Image (cartoon, rainbow, N blue to C red; front, side, top):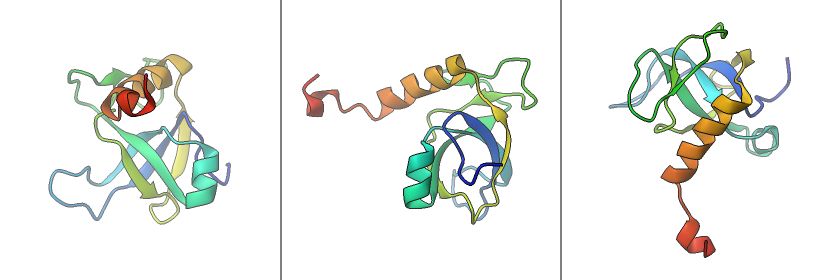
Length: 115
């Protein structure tokens, strides 16, 4: 296993302790940050995977070991080592691209960047 979670990896993380409406317990997530980010910060940015299908959630292909939908509306940044991460598999480029598109819309900096 790599020393760092890579963008597009589907890993498991322990979300406890959590508070309020935050994601809880150990669950699968899609890594949206890069290995370089993790190496420099010790953190990983992820989107949780859930069994619930809601608008804007991205379905995982049936061929995956992990079943469900990626929730790109709840990007979390966590200490991956403190939360005992484990790689399960990798998302497809289409799945990662669909998630990235929604995440980019949430954090739109178009006006700031003059686009």
